[in-house]
Image 1 (cartoon, one colour):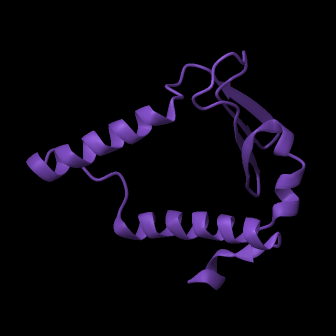
Image 2 (image 1 turned 90 degrees about the vertical axis):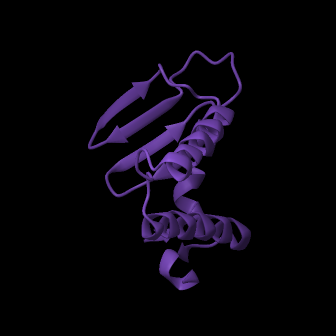
Image 3 (image 1 turned 45 degrees about the horizontal axis):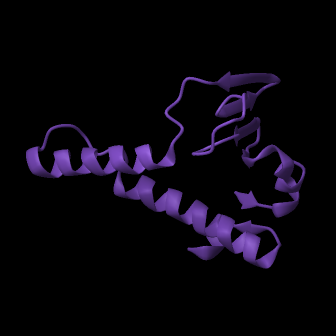
Length: 113
């Protein structure tokens, strides 16, 4: 996979967006209020779906993930949401996006491994 800042340039005015082969996902708001648009929009294969009823405060996600991890570690109840390999893949993707932004050039995820 290659992350190319040129692909994202057209969506900059739309908020934070991630492009894929079949569409995109766009975060319209996180902790700010006042916009009357879906918190998340997903476009796949020619269809756009808006998701309005989300807890879109980023602080909630950090709080909830930390509570879940502590519960799993303390009690063994529940499962970790990602394997170590999945977590490394997400980290590699994020690091490639940051490097692509720094270089202002496409970066292959596997070139940073």
